[in-house]
Image (tube, rainbow, N blue to C red; front, top):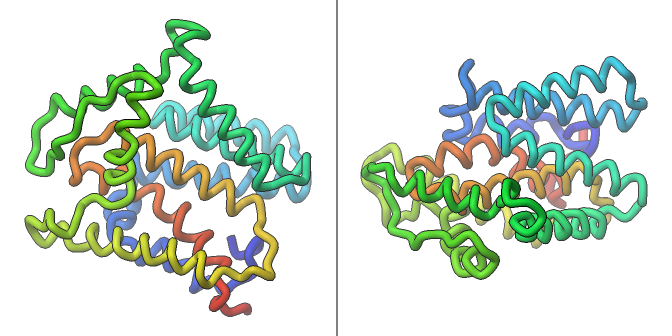
Length: 260
């Protein structure tokens, strides 16, 4: 991030050391911490390969890391491969944002067409089943939401609930104990950062493909969680890993940043 956006390291460390949920869930040697570390390494090696060329050693290393990531959380691996592949194509065709929009648009189309391609590739049903599994669980932070239907219309109808879960939960009205305070503050700050990005973005700076790779990767994972998780307490954990990939690039290209 520092090499790409040419900004102070301290400014870029804010999304790492000032996000309570990320520190809580991803700073230890367990699944969430390993997933974040592996994802960060893959991003780094891929960036280095784009700068200096893909070598057999780097390719094997990234492949091994991807296999490990797939074994830990398969949908994160698939979302990462999608982001990196689109990043590569955007450089090759020299059309950054249009390439991301086109590739992700095609991927979304294939997602809903997957049941017609092969029964075993019914991806909408897979997401709906994950939501149904969450709804079978019990907990104090359960949210009353409709059952997600595994078709295009069902996903469209459920979209407002998925957006609310992914970006706004837990609500300030859901305050139940002091443990909710950091998560509620994070949601407020996330909305503020997104607004500030559009207001204070450095319009003179050309947006690097890494920015879009991180944003599309993060938003993909947030919506996967939004469509499947039905507990406001659980969504904090699933969002925590994603937040640095969303907030860091937003902060990095704001106009009021300072250079070294």
